[in-house]
Image (cartoon, rainbow, N blue to C red):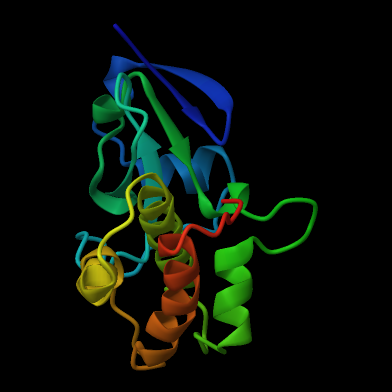
Length: 173
């Protein structure tokens, strides 16, 4: 049996004997993609959040890479923080976080960026009533742990983008 999946558009085939290896270990040890961070190691802090698309659904879902076994990724498309910036320029979420000085040490930032991007992508597909936007933002990034900034700046940065997207403004994610 073989486990087949892509990471940032590159295909991989691994023997099922590697199925219990975590996605985070594979990203770091095999691909040298170290932007996805290991913090708590048990999926609580969400610093290691990546995007996973599992066909037939085209909808991306936030996935905790530190506790996701490779065996569960067969047929999926994984995107990491390294896939976000284009042409050396930050994407809109990264830029909003920078503009709001949302992070200090930056360790949790990749997880926040990935979760925020998936939230905004979903919001583009299906806007929410304006009075529900705050709750939707909390659902998307409220469980992420940051030990430096107190979260307010992350929420402010995301709010500016979410309000624009929710009003129909196109943001390239």
